[in-house]
Structures are given as C-alpha cells and as structure tokens.
Length: 386
Image (cartoon, rainbow, N blue to C red; front, side, top):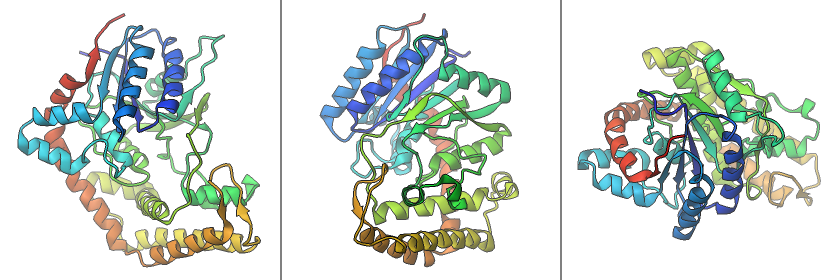
C-alpha cells in the first residue's frame, strides 16, 4: 500500500542560509499539489550548530502543514547503525562512510536518502541550493508538473536549472572565456539523454534501488543505469527552478581531477546506447578502444582550452560569474597539470571503477532493506495526514 504520492528528500550540508530559501520556496510549491507529501531532510553538515539550525528551520517551515517529516543527520545515522547487526552496519559504513565527515562525497547524501522509504509512488531529490519559484498568483506547481510528466511518459524527470549553471569546472571555464554560446566546443553540449539535473531529480519508487557511485556525474550514471535496467525514459522540463549556490566556485586541480575522471567514466558508458545496454544486461564493460577514445576527446578539449587562454593576456584576471577571481596564468598552469594527469590515465582504471561499482551493487542489495527499518525509526519527526 502506498502512503504518499511523493516523498521529497532535501540534501544539505553546512548551508542554513541557503537551505532556508530552498525550504520556503519548496513549501509554497507543494501547497498547490493537493496530495499527501512526505518531506525528509538529509543533513550531512559537519558543524553541530548548523545541524541544529537546519533541523529548526525544517520543523518551523513544515510542521504546521499536514506532512510526514523525517530528519537524518550524523546523530540519527549513528543511532540506526547501533541498532543494526554489526555485519550490516560495517558494510553500510564501508559503502557510504559516516555522515558529517570533512571528506565530502556527493554520492553520500543521495545514498543515505534511499534508506528513507515511505513507500511513496515517487521520490524527488532536491539540493539545498535549488529554488522552486512558483507563481503565487497561479495554481501552477513545478513539482506537480514533474509528477504529471513522470506518469505520462513513464520517465525519470528533472528540470533545466536556471541561474548558476550546474556544470563541471572546465565547462564553466570555457563559458567564461567564450562569450558566444554558439561557438562553444561540443564537449559543452548536453547531448546525452541521461544528463538530467541532479539538483532536481524526480523518479519512481523502487524497492530495489541502486547505489550511487562515488564519482562526479554520479547522478547521471545512476539514471543511465536505472532507466536502462527498468526500460523507462528520461525527461528534462522547462520550469521556474533556479540554481543559486552560496558562493562562486574555486578553480582547483583536485576538483578538476575528480570531475574529469567522472566525466570520462560517464561518457565511456553512455557514448553509444549499445554500450550501456550491454553493461546493464551482461555487465560487459566498455573496451579499451571505447574508453581510450573518450580520454583522447577529453584531452583534446583541454588542449583547446589551453590554446584559448593563450590568446588572452596572461596578466589578466579571469572575471567570471562562475569563479572566484584567479589569474589566467595560474588557471593555465592548473589546466596543463591536469592535462598531464589525464594523458597518463589508464583505460584499466576506468574499467576498475565499473567493476567496483558493480561489486558494491551486490553488497548494497544485501543491506539496504534491512537498514531502512532502523533509519525510519530514528528519523521521523511527526506523522500527520491531511
């Protein structure tokens, strides 16, 4: 039996100011749905004060409405682990890690969110820097629109995020240098049917959910695998949903490397439909030529960006709506070091990522349903029905 039409799972980390806006806009939108909705806050904050602020905000904004509410932070997670057989809790920690860790992983909150299972028809993952700006004068709801499309087209659904572009550092760098979008490199095009917005991702409920890999583009890979396995579509809508991060990004070598490996892994798997079909059906990994072709394309893109920066005065500062200020000379040096690393990247390393992910899926199936019961007991704040 389904308790709710939808469970909305808000993912946050040390961001109470931005979370407040996210929750207020969200609350305005779901008032227009006229159906039972559960809301959950998955709080990966490192700071105890931030966790308390986030919980207080969550309660204040939603408790007056008729929703079932769940809150998961390091405290609730630890209590759930204590009440779980040690063999299961050890496996959970090895797959996900601990909440509130300084070592941030974008997959962690998404995987933890899957333990909150209200048996709803659909789930919506929502990042804390995403704002759903509904028109107060009308009855339009961005979430209801997404739900209707998910049903009609049997699809995973996201939206074209407005505002700050949710792209990798090198894509944002090119858009900072090349002002005319018509002249952008093909790497900067959103051509994959699986490249949905992870900041707003609505998907049908599934008792056999999959593990998000610990990679950049983890949400894209998850959707690519899941939708192929279940033979349902993917759809991106135009809607008044905005990406509004707290601050501009820092152009760093570590972040470039993390994103580069994720992008190469994703594109190696989704470059042709047959590759992901074989991967899902037979667990057949992309071969050396397929992976190397994507690595070469990525290196060509880096070389193109380095050449574009050379056309500029190296004493200039990169002034961009996406980055904190950085000298172009330093930016160029970082790109060159990154190119050196990618040129040495082995196709075997990418294959190993696939292998590890598949091995983890088997472990995930064994622990997810059993741990879900422990999480639900520790996270519920209130249960009310309209």
